[in-house]
Length: 171
Image (cartoon, rainbow, N blue to C red; front, side):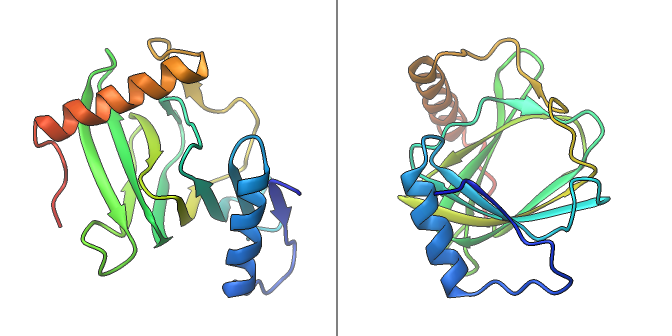
């Protein structure tokens, strides 16, 4: 199954069939994620995607020097961890679908270090970011572990620290 689906259509409609297809594809791929690109081209000034993440999907802390991004949770739960330049967690944003007890929308307008940590078996989100998309545009944090299990432990410890310090955004 594919990890990335490109529509390229003038009118893109996302319903339950797409959600089911994305969740199945995410579960079947090594990266444990799948996305539907709603924009027509990687050169578009706005990049808009619906993304499914399985609980064990892994994202290293990174930042985008010249981009903004926003998430809107459609289904499931996740945390967005914000780090300082030394790798200490500054903030944890708990996100859920509307009415789920957390924030359902988030926007990052500065080049802050951040990582996404799924908090349910599967989470589906709508992401919007500025384009164009150029591979290698993100900076991966030099202080973050690169090996998968070490990164997983680092993110869990960072999340626990942020939660312990009550650095979670309430809703």
